[in-house]
Image (cartoon, rainbow, N blue to C red):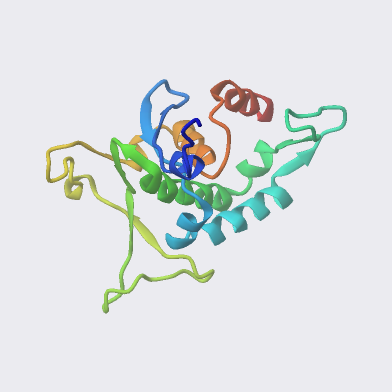
Length: 184
């Protein structure tokens, strides 16, 4: 009787994957499951942004079916007119990237602004206010001497690619590039 690998699909979910990003750089990432995104407080924000993108920044295109079989595409002009949406997406992407990239170690380039009691300040929409970590305060290596990369050192397209892969998107780089070209 042949040996059966019990739980093989569960084990596969925890594997790390080498990902080549649009710039050609490589990194080792893990794809989080939805529960991990909940645990770090990102699933609700991801859903909110998905809703925002679907409602405001997707345009219907007649006679232009996409690879997914529908006729929608990203409306880049709409994004250009909504800088707050771009900042929210990049902030969320940076949080996710810092969580999923295993090698090199990636750290968010912005930190929460704290009040006098050490609690994060929030804006009028309930989002945590953040400030850029000044270059002079950035730690460049961890305790073992391994380099630390800050999210703002990573090309924006690379950040968006890692983000979309991490929340369930494809690792097909050609498809990602094609979607970007079609959306311009």
